[in-house]
Image (cartoon, rainbow, N blue to C red):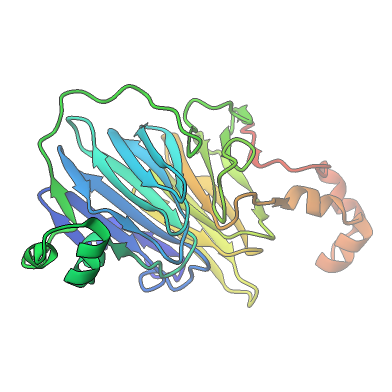
Length: 335
């Protein structure tokens, strides 16, 4: 499919791959329509972990799709260690040192959104290798020549493997994570459901927000836009049709299925519909920790029938055939 807003993970070669797993990044290079956001999918095999890193120019929010992982993060004032399991959301602020390891016997999959179209990554291996022997010795009181021996190693793999431990760790709470799968459904009707993760239930969020929603067969997300955020829609399962209208009048109509995604920049008019026979499950990432919502139903409701009739060149009573919503619909109920 040719669209500046569409991507399919299956068609993008992982930038990092080894026996320990793989990392596939989706940036503005792959999706030119991205604004203030990018996507990445981390897959860790049994015993796999990714090298300690930090992002100088991007916050990062993760959604655990499968398996269990242990997240270790160094903040300016503490060490945060917590596990994530399927349905957990977690946040890693810009510049925070972190690494993630598979803590279960199955493949672990975590999808991320970052609030930069081309996020930068600083690697622990490169950081250590940049140090002179005198600086390292002064910092760690190590024998002379100690760091030079470390520099002889060739780190060709970003994802490595450690002997795995039996069983996943017990749940460890953290202010940096929230389980969206078990959260209250703000909407749950015949059309589908909606679950939110914003600063209200994860106060540490900054620059990014996330929600989960589902559409039953024939279910529709109300046509809408977000004035303060772009929306990156990633389909977990099912088949959808996503329509995005740009300010220049161009309309992108995309069929987006499991393992694929689409993006609507801030204030771009868009809608989502289930066009398959099975339920659709979706994670939507936003380039704002508290995205707003403008529903087309309530927008239409602000216009008089006379105005609408003039715009569309029909009789004013033509618009008596339906009830104008007074508020947002979000998930449209199936009749």
